[in-house]
Amino acid sequence: MPQIMPERHLFGPGPTNAYPEATVALGFPLLGHLDPAFIERLDNTCEMLRTVWGTTNQRTLPLSGTGSAGMEAAFVNTVGPGDVAVIAVNGLFGERMCDVAARCGAEVVRVDHEWGQPVDAERVAAAHPAPKVIAAVHAETSTGSLSDISALGELKGDAILIADAVTSIAGTELAADDWGIDVGYAGTQKCIGVAPGLAPFTISDAAFERRIEKPQSWYLDLGMLGGYAGTKASGRTYHHTAPVAMVASLEAGLERVLAEGLENVWARHWAAGTALQNGIEEMGLDLFAAEGHRLPQLTSVVVPDGVDSAKVRRYLLERFQIEIGAGVGQFASTVWRIGLMGPNANPASVTLILGALKEAVAKA
Image (cartoon, one colour):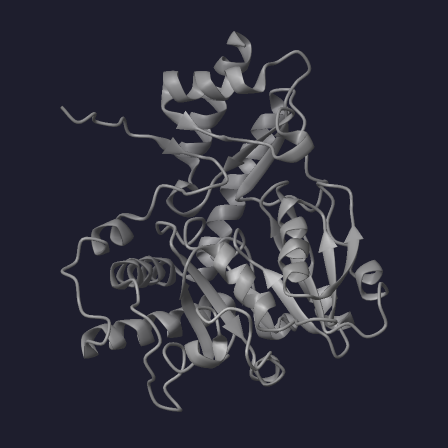
């Protein structure tokens, strides 16, 4: 007999429980990827992505792949052998940016920060006099820290500014055009509240004109992708078989977010995250990310001395069906990461997590 999996309360840094509308849309009858009805759905999705990105960029589209595909597309289309890429590193995903840029042949100028601290825009801007790109993570998923991307936009000069917004999009304020973001990538599985599998992506016309003409990746070549999705001005060109069910789900998730009101969604995430962080401190636990730069949608907690991190996480999973995340790298056993994203950003989730965590720590 097949095993029936228990219902999980997913409060980790990875996939969240999706909005019901997005889950229902996954079961819609499948359309062909060239069906006019699907093309209309794709165009509607791209238009809504412009709203959540805060941009008018013509080439704003869902890439067929997770947020990591978005990261690779950002670099493979903008840097080649010998190009200078200044990259801020204040967590795992800044490190991953360095790896991807190096694989493209770029000369990587790495600007390290203490994990849990925000990016220092002035130090990043001063790292090289004329880089091709400057890149940073807006909301660092590995630490729960939030950085000021607008400050980098003011100091970028002629550089192309790349921003990772995987955890921030539809959860905290994001204004690509106003902040000077030239290339941005995100994920669907966090605050947008849709299953993982697509990478919301945007690139400005100016950055597109400076792209690598023939990037190493055919699949992620924005010169071809831009004619398939995100733009109707130059006519439709076929590129690949789109994941039609995922696009339908993303459309439904975005409609849900925009029906609530983007600023209302930001406020809901802020209220839930603040309540959780206040409750954790009232329990006598310490928060990991720097005060004043903490993500509301992803709270990083210092594991108390003498407490077995894995044992607490296992107790939460087995006793309450609650899944929270461990830390990463050197903080794998000393930090917990608790996500309140999408439909999980609500007072009931805060109450559930605080009560269950208190009991789990006491039992550890």
